[in-house]
Every structure is written in C-alpha cells, then in structure tokens.
Image 1 (cartoon, rainbow, N blue to C red):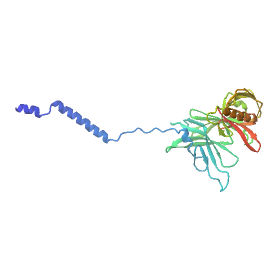
Image 2: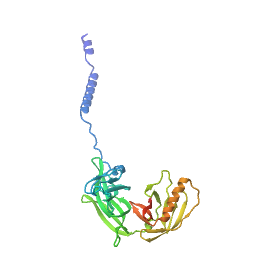
Image 3: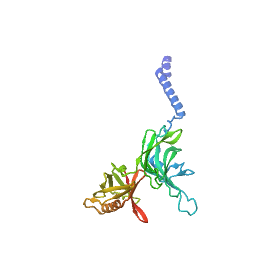
Image 4: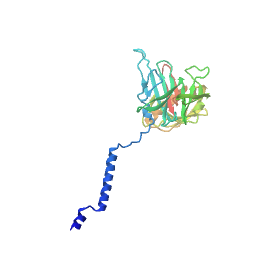
Length: 315
C-alpha cells in the first residue's frame, strides 16, 4: 500500500516537465507584455498637390503667408486702397522631384505675386512637409512678367523654359526664350544655369494639340467636348466644339498674330455644342496676340475699352 500511495501521490515526470515548460512560456508572455512594443519610425512623407494649395510660403513677402485653395490675398497697404498683395500657386505646374538629394520627393510649382502695381513677379517654389504641413523649402525669383512656357525635371534638377525680357524688350512684352536650371547647392535652392535658346514665335506652339480649358476666364461647362487647336505650317486647325475648322495664321511680330477666315465642316450640333462652337470661333477669329500663362497658351482678343476676350489652352 505504501508503494501504491507513493505512485499516485506524486506527479508523473512528464507532467512536471510540461508544467515547467508552460510556466516558462507564461513568464515570457508576462515579460513581453510588460515591455512596450517597438514601433518602426514613420517614414517622412512627400507633400500632395492638395497640401501644396494650402502651404505656407516664406521668401516672397516680408512675412510668411498661408495659401487658401492656392491663393493668398492680403490687406491693402493703405486703408481704403483697392490694391492689395496677392500670391498664387499655379496647380497646373505642380511636379514632384527629389531636389535636395534626401528622400522623400519635394513638391515644385510656379508662384506669381503682386503687391498692387503693374508688375507681376514669378517665383519657383520648392515645398516639403514641415510639422505635418506643406511649407516652402526654398523660393527663387524668376523676374517681372516672365512667362513660363514649360516646366519639367531631371534627377536633382528643375528645368524651366521661360519667355523673359531680352535686350531692347519693354518689360510688358518679353520675347527672349531662356532655359534655366535650378537645384540644391550649398544647402539652399539656387539657379544653376541660364542660357538663351531662342525667341518667342508661333513655332513654339507646333506639334501640340492644345485643348481649351477656359473661355474669358471661366471653365467650360461640365460635359462639354472641349475645342482644340493645332498651330503649325501657317495654319490653325482643330475641333471647334462640334465641327472641324482650319484657317491661316500669321505672326507679324513676336506674340502678335492674325487669323484669317476659317473653313468649317457642316455637321449639325445640339444647342449646347453650337453655343460653345460659335463663341470659340468668334474669339479665334478676333485673336490678335498670344502669351503663356503658367505653361498654358492664352489667345487674346481685344475689345477696345472692355476687358479682352480670352481662350486658355492646356497641352
């Protein structure tokens, strides 16, 4: 009987080993739960296009300003004055590129500013995320009434083709085409190079199907098939809203043009398309000049003392 009590009163060896193992695992679990989990550091993020439109901009005015939907309008310099400082970020020019050589990419865009006078000053802005918000990492001035023809980038560089005043040009009417490169040097955004590559000419418009995005400063109605124009070989041709059109175009002096009578196909259109077509062709026939607005083509049809009618095209 003594042997029997010893056999059944003591725990089997296997059970003892299993109990020790379970206890050890439980102890480890308690130890791990008591140790804070190690989290991977969040990677820095590049700004988005929407964040650039509400960014804080430093280096244009005397103090930082914050954009609302891509625009800042400050108080007049004097009480009751009509003019006031403005700053616009052109969303059509936004690009993303690693400018400073460290991830993530920065946002790049054209800025234009005015303090109420006749001048409109262009700037290249580079933006990064700072304290959870987009803000300028650097701003470089481009000049007064400089027109941006094209903006693109290469590794570590931002390149611009601009129309700027050349020798003998009045500030209102630049005709010199220059290519400028910008990048990160000595810890800040700087212009790396600038060279004259040509002059303002309708030949710059060739090989591009320009698509209408605004008429007289207003976007086209939703659902509209946008008119287009292709200007090359002395002709302007494209889609006018319903029909196809073609007609001659000549350039008397850089930036000043004359369009002849258009030949238009005779397809029947609905009322909305007909209205767009009539207005578009009317402005095309009356256009006397063109310029570039943040990489887009603007045709201008003057109306004497009234504001000019305009056609704005994107690439």
